[in-house]
Length: 370
Image (cartoon, rainbow, N blue to C red; front, side, top):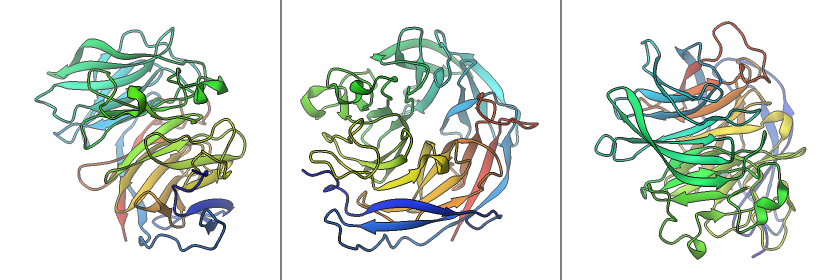
């Protein structure tokens, strides 16, 4: 299969028009779209949305990274450097529920993603992705009575470095746990079938290969540089990936596929490799968390300091992305769809690479309208 044959429309963000505002988009990119054979192709018909910051949910969180909602509509938030997990309730004080043992923070490592068991509280577990002194790991924790306990490592041996640790966790409707990993700063890991680096993992809640995984491996795709965003739109899994110097990517994930790194960065049309459905100049994105709502992938940008709204349809096409809040809140790390239909959006200005303001880091509540 030639690279790009899976995706019906390839989106190349080639330029940005600056600007800022409130509910409207802050920057509309110039977008070229084509089918894999180079012929012009239509974009997705999903209507545009408008975003507005409705308020601040919480302040004073130190380098928030992962965020996952509980059935009671509160959220658990990880702090990358401290190794702490905090519970956030809108309109209430932030409380600490415990510290994950063995977290070894670095420039991009530490306590990263978090996911709540889909059968919680029947199965009172949360899952975290973290950097230890030796590797990156996924652990299952009991969360009950406002505290974490009984940590059990279920996946280990994910390559670790100061950079490119991946770290996002997401449960699918199938009940399996998905994880995005990075190449650990060592490019060959991404194409090495024996390495967990540069992959998208799909595992059971005990850390075993999910039934149907290619060759019964823990991973379902390879050829990624640094996956820090995972989201489902229906049954379709999407991933956001950091580029090196040129293109950041939004990928539609198909098990068994190779996404090209290090041979490819962005749309490259290489045989046997799958192209992204969207790409951005690294200065405009550097994407971390993504979520799906109202026919869009919402993608938080670190270096880009903006929230992208990207219309998607069936994982095979993308309409014109629109950026919101450019430069208004600094680095943006994580975005999650909240139970009330809004988005919770975290800043990342205390991570050593941003300009922290009073109250940082914070969680913003963002409303969506059409």
